[in-house]
Image (cartoon, rainbow, N blue to C red; front, side, top):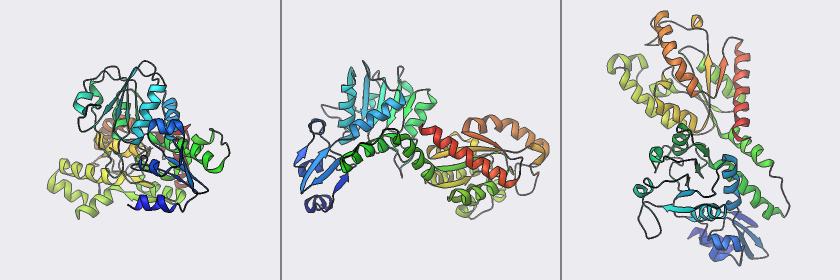
Length: 383
């Protein structure tokens, strides 16, 4: 009702439209671009002297994202998850790019759609998610198991918060090309802005803007051995980058009302890891944070997925002889224990991290190196 009242009053010069209003706005448009009408969805509306004119820039935005990911639709079977306005756009784009079959997947069976169980038995080459599944705050939700698709080449997801959904994470683990929703978001906005302003804008701005958005909204997550300096360096980075700092171990203690050594002593390591997993998932689904993790957080693959979904993971390395022994840390009982721990965890830190920073210089030098690594990864992600 509020959306209809807004459209009737027309107290705007132009609007960009997202789910679930891409079909509703068509009722109020006096003129609709033929391509948008054929798709059956409008996401860009300009108020031209009281007459609403509508276009669909999601079409070009989606193709920008697909091209960036290297997805080739020619002669392929494409599964499109969802039944809304974006699904119509994606289906039209895939067909126009020469897809042999474009199949729509829905939770509910209809004559025109497959169920997710049926979809898992198809021989799809490309999967595109147009549903809100996996979108904040429901991070981690995934509607389709990708493991059974023998010829899968690419997985695309229009969701942009988080930057990497579980669907994309699983696809990347399978070695499949992936594309997230941020480039599509920026590209469709660039094309919409051209209608808003009546002037052309170079496509070269798209990766620059995507990189700026990512750097502004992304988390910086620090992993590494106990006493490698994650908390102190994290606080320094928070000041430098203007982000809020969260120490995962302190957050576990705050939420549980107990000190970590007491949790280990009373409940055991398995209970602590379960608590760590829950807190890690809750913290890292937020944006714009600096997160210092516990030394063993990388032992759980789900923690790693959560760390990477919304940002950059940096492995902070410190020489073994510089690490603290005993004290507050339950598993750092001796130098030998630390040496065994380091050998076991080093490949996990390496696999989890986007970048490695040696914590061997001054505090200021290390903080600056982490900041530079964060911005370098931010640029590289969207170049």
